[in-house]
Amino acid sequence: MMTLPGIALFYAGMVRRKSVLNTMACVVAMCSLVSLLWFAAGYSWAFTPGSGFIGSSERMWFTGLDYMKEAGKVSVSHIAPNVPESVYAMFQLTFAIITVVLVVGSFVERMRFSAVLWFTGLWTLFVYSPVAHWVWEPGGWLAQMGALDFAGGSVVHINAGISGLVCAYFLGPRRGYGREPFEPYNLGLTMAGAGLLWVGWFGFNAGSAVASDGRAGLAMAVTHIAASAGAISWMLGEWIVRGRPSLLGLCSGLVAGLVAITPASGFVTPGPALVIGLVAGVSCYWGATGLKRLLRADDSLDVFGVHGIGGIVGCLLTGVFASKTVSGVEGSIIVQAMSAGVVLIYSLFATAIILWVTMMITGLRVDEQSEQTGLDIAQHRERLGA
Image (cartoon, rainbow, N blue to C red; front, side):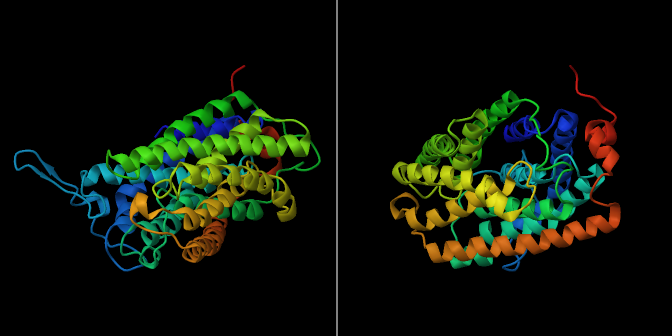
């Protein structure tokens, strides 16, 4: 859960002062709503045997997640038999939360709070849960094809990245985008958030081993190496192109490295992790600058540039570097490319449909006056202190 204050601070530091509290409020509300939906249906649809496309209703409302002390009975998941299923369900909840929360960065400063809630609920149930089932449930159709995704390169980052890009197109650019400077509120908050994300990521990647063993330890090590390489790689790219490094670039680069190592963390050794981080840093720098200009989208905090591109890089390089000595499986770049493409295309169209439905229900964008005033006042009647 450390990644949640991490992403709240990371994003809040980059938006303008007048929408800092709204950005944080979105993170808290989304976390709470996703938690309830995960309890109601999301976990069951994602992580129970059903068809290759969706799980069953077996664990809706956490039915069957029992613990009976006197009988010594505790339910376990067929996916993670070494821990109680309640622990596994809560661990997977953190992935469900962070995935949709990442999308916030694409629509900051202009989306109605009510629309954020509708989008969060529909997206969690009809985008995240099915994709998680395809990739992480052993009977899922992409898992059956041999797709490798240890901790969320496609399920989390490609999924969130392309959804963020669709959101940016649907809502349109912030008023004044490209014509006036958008000064970030406090990059010190962004740096603090990046630090929390860095630590929290060890839980995602090492925790995905669902055991305290050598594979978990190696996953933690390669995660740190890739994050460090991503930060240095982005910094050097920015230094060459712009003539100077920046704190924001370093923070963005380390997140890019974390994103790219996510699918590979349980399958690679330290050497390939270094390569993955270096490639991710420069690729995501291009994604957040050159590609962003080509796409002409106000993806405000570079959700697609960092998470979409980083997720794609990580998924493909997992196919190149996955080591049989680490995990007992070898990667296929063809299967990895197919898996990444399927998730990207499904998420693109499903997100567009969900945004259209949300627009019909409550509208998507705040009015011009609210945007000029700032969403802290317009949506919450709250003001950031001095």
